[in-house]
Length: 105
View (tube, rainbow, N blue to C red):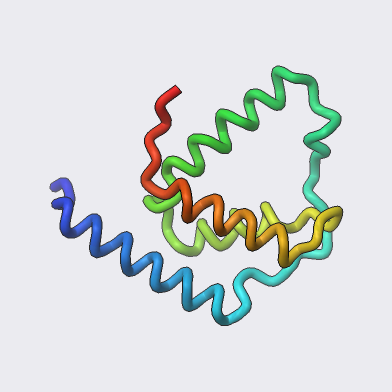
């Protein structure tokens, strides 16, 4: 049976509280190894594939289980080219700003 709007809102609020608590505890630890691919070197068609996958992930983010969110967040912030704390902050802000966004293209 489909969740009612209030149930979805309550679940989303609980996730937000859990993620805030998790972030207050230090969030995901930085992973020392870099991502397995170099985005800057990809052909345009492959970059577009990643853009589409990323957009779909952002659109479904709040529906993902917290452990999956943490794993994805940890993998996304594993790139040691950037300051890990800054990257985590930017990703978290982006996800927060785009939560519930429709994928209108």
